[in-house]
Length: 209
Length: 277
Image (cartoon, rainbow over all chains, first blue to last red; front, side):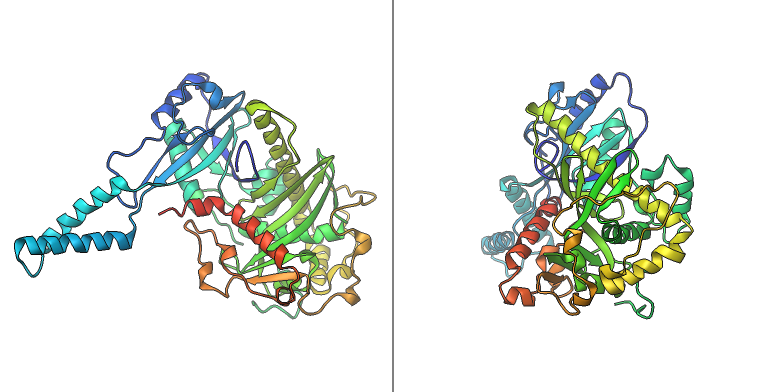
């Protein structure tokens, strides 16, 4: 579901700042720089983010502009990978490793430092075998009119997106406020900003349920 | 006056968005679903079969109503009368030959589950241009409706005329709906065009309106189950809580309710994706 197919669930942004004249080359380089890369040493719970093409989340080469620049629209997807170890399986392996250490060293208890080292090694070992949970969130940016539709409404993906967008393009995203819809009528905006809260409850029933 | 800038640094005035949702619901009844919008002309709009409510100062949904004729149900108005705030509003929009279904959500007026008319374009370029055109058209309709709301909301007649009428509508239903106020800048449609699922001629007279839970409406109380905890990014998982109703027990409306929940699941796809450990 997103830019090319399915129902759209989008938050709209205003893009603050000027798009440079050489944006074709500059944005290509920026997208390449911030494209998604598999982490070499993933840590449990750590998120890895970067851009990928909308067509396939494994495509992270932006050198072909025809895949992401459509006249005055720029499209791409934010890819977010997160690895997590299965807690019960990890604990079971950890107990086995500690038991093996105790047997090997003929000890009743393992020192904390030894436990920590065993745990760290096991984490690294298991993380390399664990597949990430992958999420992608598409966007479509109208560089002429200065708006952008990001295909997610949740707080976390929007925060990640705005941060990476700024790092990549050097431009700031501001979520559209409903009052933006009235920008061509300043008097209306002013009136709305001064409007208080209307209580719709019928008289005599003003008890919060 | 509530003015929430939050970390977005964009004032959102959440109370105005909530009022907009109620006004849309009310105005759809009052104006027969026909609106003459600046730059667009006549647009038909009606509330579809899903409404969700929250309580003041909370963002997560506390009650979700689904089923046939939800917008005119006694439960929906009872939720308003008890002080609950409309959180999501599912609308059907019709402009010229194009029809859209969309849920307006949250203080930013996010468009969720926006469904377009069938596409005619082929190829990536054509598809993108057509879908963006349709998105812009739907967004323009929402803009036009918000502008109409703003004009009524800032007019002097709001407190003397419109608000009392909305209160009466909340209490009595459609029977209480008067004519729209005469406001500069708002041009009313002359003759209501036939509209979606519930034509005006089929409205239920107030005297026959059910006073208790309607058999056609499914009520989901999001408080009934702790599993309705917020999603990983603060979005509620409405589908997690499902309260059986008389309709369910009778086997009526269950399938529709499940369809609605399936749809809701789709709307929260991003949120669920993001829950990846």
